[in-house]
Image 1 (cartoon, helix red, strand yellow):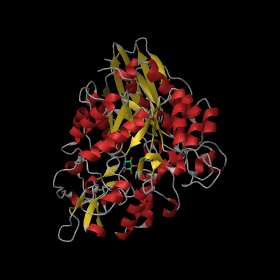
Image 2: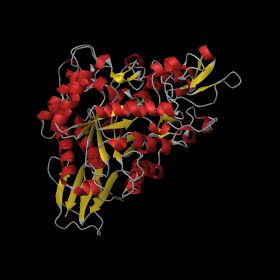
Image 3: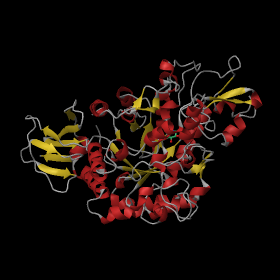
Image 4: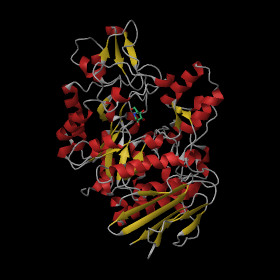
Length: 558
Ligand code: NOJ
């Protein structure tokens, strides 16, 4: 497969609301991002993916956009944004913006028009249907609880919203709407951006007729699968978008695609398909979800996790391109989820980073991951802000579930775990704001923060810095193939990568107990070096090893 800059890049995701507040209003902003670009340059990342900064009533923190060509007042002005882009480029950092076009805000001018009358020119920009026997047009559920349809009195019809009621789905069957979207994308490319991350973009093609979805096991959240995920015209739409927009620019695109399989990902990302460069898949994020979905929390099964990630590594090698991530603004913090965020916080955060960054694909680091930020436990639901969490809480309470039981699931899975403000230093509010933060800071900011990470040569920060540097130095990390070792071991995560006669052996212990690992005889360790490790004392290259709790090592043979 061809070499591309985005295959060699490491991306850093900024969730602007929680990153850095420059004006004391308690909300992160664009000038605040500019202040921290030197920090990102020091980390060594190549690309920033910026979550939405467009005008929005913030029902879903900017993922409900009311004007795609304006910057949200709370975040600054277009001039600030242009300044930020220039400052990024000056430092050799590229900018990938968020593209949220499965839906808009209900306050977008298109929707304001659309709901006025059935014959309004914008009516068909959205998905309107008559009710069925006085009820919703079908049984689809919103990802944020309840029906995916909302009744609108004005025209006595329902509109579809797969997310909140303030996020009506756009109608991609309408060519005029598609052209509006492409035009808006070109607007941002002309301003000099380097790509788009595309929000739930495999939801844009719905099955014709919008039939009821089966709802197995009484599951509330209809799996939808064939109904709006990877729908019948999805490849056609993405290819058209590529021809109309991406083909004209040297850019990178990543499609967020729940419910995608490696086979489909090859269709989305394969060379010559001209759709997107890579996808965010979710399979590995669902390992700790039971049959009832996200809030049905079950223990993380490492064997299952390895099986999934191996399937993706092997499946896409030479045929498509992977994204690698443990974290984003929708996911709990990985060191709390899969590591040990107390006694072994630093060591386990480094171990998890090792597993991920030694695989094939483009790695994404979510703000705070590079200093090992953890999940949070706020005392009451009043301290939470996320619409998904709040809607779920209300629904589960109505169903009779106890407050304590619901709160436990929020502590494990809630999106606000990722959204607590970035912890910059040990001063009040972790140095995030001089005002009152929109969401409380994790109380552990006095010990976990950027200043202390930068002062400590053994911090998680410098480990990430090394991982990023290694990816640039060793082609095998970008290009090598992948073979899992000890696939059935419940605590070991071990694999080998090969490229042009070179070999990498990655050995990690994902548990609180020591574990033995033997490198198979077939793998030569001759002239091997320890490329990386997360212990105080460097290990040696050995075939039979005892891995301490949460230890990770990487051997390199050339
Ligand atoms: C996925 C985004 O990552 C999430 O934050 C958002 O709530 C939904 N899409 C809806 O836009």
